[in-house]
Every structure is written in structure tokens, then in C-alpha cells.
Image (cartoon, rainbow, N blue to C red):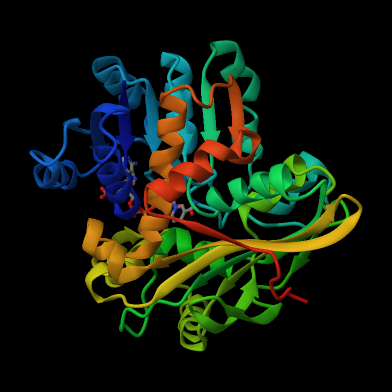
Length: 419
Ligand code: NDP
């Protein structure tokens, strides 16, 4: 039915591409393009002969719109799936605009070097929300809305797990279970163990920046900011067990606050063990999480990129990670005048993922929804012109596809709440 250009060939991309190849009726042809073409070629060799999808590869530096435009003009895809890094989002969106091609991603734009930016000034200018300094938000990408609409193309933002599946869970809960949703608690639990003293389960740079930032949540129409890891709760996760979890800022809070009408509070919690937090604090204290270049023996290095080179590659964690993830949302609200609470979640087993696609569950739980979002856009099941967060589409076809492609979900109508 269509041609997809996939940009990036890391942990998430590898799963998304393998899943596209399981869905050859929709993805007739894919081009895997990334900075390091050897990774694209290796994946192509692994998949060829096992799928009807025709695979080509290309080298692209997606920091440069011109390079992406050239590639789009030669491959002529129906859509571009961006599973490189959030730093490339705008350059890829610009290329999609120039070539009138649909766009899908899994993470919102972040500028690469944040140390020098005056975030408070940016935020105050943008929305006048006092005290909110988180460094990633949707304003940059939402600013493309009119231009995408005029060009007659679609940008689907946030088609991973969180954002992504959790956002679709929210739209689904509102459509089928509530007249009004009052609170959403997004709970992201990784109960997996890779056996290393310290490793991140997706891109270390993105992961550590996210976790070391100030926390924030949405309440009664405004942001409430917290210190990093200031709010801790313990939750007994189905099929995983009791875990400590901490409140973080997370990008989908911003879009859900706009798109889930009537919602009064949205919080995001992620589980961390004490050892992870101690390692991270120590690295932060000695400056290893900085994105500002420093000179070392006559060579410029960026501390967090140097750290990334030392840490295990997230893609290598697959064979050694055991245990399960449980990611989902607890909703409270009202249906037919009665208060109710439901919990929609998915449980994913690291070893099962490895058996299927040689990857751990974090890449799997992101790569599968990335493929599903791309499939729905490519096949025009989701057909809107402009820039949209994923919860703005009909959730039903996406929920059906989750069951079909390896991320089955559960609705618990009597869950424990988070205080
Ligand atoms: P990886 O670091 O494993 O892979 C990133 C890939 O992007 C690599 O192939 C890298 O190439 C490529 N890349 C980086 N810069 C460029 C560039 N300038 N031009 C072309 N290619 C480039 O990351 P992950 O697979 O773990 O994460 C991918 C994305 O998924 C990220 O945006 C991340 O934030 C998002 N994500 C979203 C989640 C969600 O639930 N929504 C959860 C987890 C991740 P090279 O090999 O040369 O470095």
C-alpha cells in the first residue's frame, strides 16, 4: 500500500522496522536511513528473505533539512517515521513540509545544547506560566500546525508508548468509560533487571536529561513544579510487584491537558531503584550530565556524550534483561453521574521481546506503537491535515492494533489509586 522512510536505526527503530516487515500489506517498501549506514545495512541483511517488504538503505544526517529533502525526493515515501533523536524533529518536519510528506515521531523536539538557554524566559514569553522551567515542550512543533494544514499533510506527534500508547489509553477511556475524566496518573514501571550497576534502557543522553530535570504536574489549569525526584510513591504493579516511583515532567501531560477536556490533574510517575538514582546524582554532581562542550587535552567533548560512549548501548541490553514492564494510566472521573476509577495498562516481558525481535521491552514498547501510528497514517485510517498529538485521533483502530502486534492491554475497573 505504501512507502515509508524511517530515519534513525537505533533501538526503537530496529523494533519499528521489524514490525513494519511483519505488516508488509501496508509497508510495501521501506528505506532505512541514518547517520551510520552500516547499522541500516546490517538490519536490512537480517530481514531480507523473511519479509515481503522491500528494504533499501541510505545515509543521512538528519540535522540538515537539505539532506533529508534530497533523500525524500529520491525515495518518494508516503510518510517519514522519525525515530532518530528529538534534536532532529524540526529539521525533519521542515523537509516534510518542503516535500509535502506526512510525518510521524515518538518524542517532542528538544534543542541539543540546553545549558546556555534561558528556559524561564522562553516559557514566560510563551505562555506566562510562572515557575515552569522544564526544557522540553510541544510549542516548537505545534507552531507548524497551520503550515502543515496548508500543505495538506499530517504530522502525528508522539507515537511511542509514553507519549503514545498512554495518550491513546486516555482518548479510549474518555470515549468508552467516562463522560468526564478528572485525573490521569500515568505510571511507567520497568521491573526489568539487566545486571549492570548502571545503564539506561533507551538513549542515555535523552533518558538522563529527562530524569534529572525538575518534575512538574498539571493541576487546575496550571503547572506545579517540583524538585527532581521530590515526590515519591510506592505502587503495587500487576504482574511486577511493589516499586518506588517518582514524579517527573513528561511531555504528554502538556498535550493531554489541552485535549482531554475537563481534566483537573495529570501526573507522570516512573519507577527507579535507589542504586540508579545514586549513580545519576553522582554523575550529575561531577558535571557528567552537562550538554556544554568542554576542552579536554586539546579536543572539545560534550560530557553527556562522553558518558554515553562509556555506558552500555541500550540495544545490547536485550539478551541480559529479565523481568517485565507495566505501563499504563489510572483514570478517575464520572460516568452517568457516578464516580469511577479505571486502570488501563500493558505488561511486556523483556525476554519475550528479545525472543521475537532481539530487543528489550523499552525499545519494543516504543517501536511497536511507532509502526502502528505510521500504518494508520499511511493507510489513511487516520487522515487529518495539520499537526496533531496522538490522542486527537480515534483511539479504536490503534487499540485493536496493539492487541494484534504484541502489546495487549488490560482494563482494571477496580484498581488501587495513587495518593
Ligand atoms: P538510539 O540512540 O538507540 O538511536 C538513535 C538513532 O538515531 C541512531 O541510529 C542514530 O544514529 C540516529 N541519529 C542520531 N542523530 C542523527 C542524525 N543527526 N541524523 C541521522 N540519524 C541520527 O535511540 P532510541 O532508539 O533509544 O530512541 C529513538 C527515539 O525514540 C528518541 O527520540 C527517543 O526519545 C524516543 N523514545 C520514545 C519513547 C516513547 O515512549 N515515546 C521511549 C523511548 C524512546 P547513529 O547510530 O549514527 O548514532
